[in-house]
Amino acid sequence: MKIEQLIKEQYNDVNEKTIVHPLKNNETNLQNLFPIEKFIKDHFQRRNLSTDQDGYFEVLLETELKKIPHYTHEEITYFSSRIPEIVSLDVISTMSSSILSDGYKKNHLGILLTKLVQYHYNKLPTNKPYVLLLQEYGEKVPMLGSKLAGPHMHIFGDCGSNVAREMEQGILEIDGSVKNFCGQRMKGGTIKINGNAGDALADCMKGGNIILSGNAEDYTADLMENGIIFISGSVKNNLAQKMSGGNITIQKNAGDYVGSQMHRGHIIIYGNCGKEPGADMTSGKIIVYGKAGKITKHREKEGMLYVNHRKRLRRNGLEE
Image (cartoon, rainbow, N blue to C red):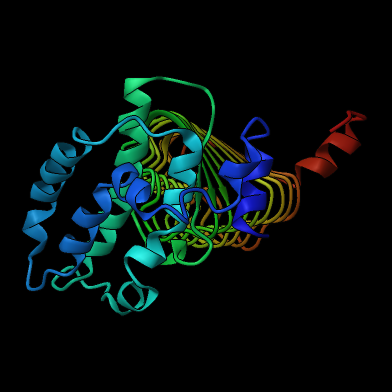
C-alpha cells in the first residue's frame, strides 16, 4: 500500500495536496519543517561512540526538539516514512546488534521517533493517533514506544526488540510483528499487536494490557507482576514463569512448563499445553480446557491446576 494511501485512510480531513508528496517539491519548506534532519544525519555519521552516550543523546534530542515548531500528525507520518532517505537502509542494515559497537544507534533511532511523538503530544494532548510508516526499516529498529506516556501511536510495519519498554500510558498499535522483549517492564497503557511476537513478551510486566493476534515464542510473561495479556494464537515454552500477579488468556495452545514456580495470578488456556504445567507453583490458578502432557505427582504445591476443564464442564452439564 502506498504511503499516500495510508495517510489518506488515517486522516480523512487532510487536503489532497498535502497527501500527495507533501513538501516534496519545496526543499526550503522541507528544511524549515524538519530541521531535526540535519541533527539525525550528523549523529548517524559519527563513529566510535560508546553506549555510555545514550543518555547524552537524549539530552541532545530534547534540546533539538525545543527548536522545532509543532508538527501536524500528517507531517510526523510523512517524516517517519522518509527515514530511509535521511539515514540510508544500507546504514541501518549494517548496524551491529552488539552493544559494544554501533548497534546502540538503532536504539537512538527508535528513541528519536518516540520522543518526537511524545514531545508534540505533551505540547498538545490529543486522542488522534500518530501514525508511523516503518514498513521499510521498522524491524531493524528497537526501542520504539519506549517509555511512552499518553500518546496513541499506530505503527505500520514490523518492529525490532524492546518495543514499548517501560511504557507508562497510552496506546501502541502495531500492524506487524515484534521481536524479543516487547512490553518489558511496562507499567500501563495498551499494546495491540496485529502479528506475532518473539521471546520474552511482557517480561517483568508491571501493569497495562497486551493484545496479540498471532503467536508468541518462549518465556512469555516471565516474572510478570500485574496486568492483562490476551493472545489469540499459541505460545511456546515457559509461559508465566515465576508469575506473581495478573491475568493471562491463551486462545490456542501452550508449550511445556506453564506457570512454573508461579506465586499468584490466573492463566486460562483454551487449547492444550505441554508437560509439567504448574510445576512448583505456590499459589494462583491455571485452567487448561484441553489436555496436558506429563504431570509429575506432587509437583503442584498449593496453587490450583485444572486440566481437561472442558470435559469437566460437559460432565457437569455446564456451558463453557
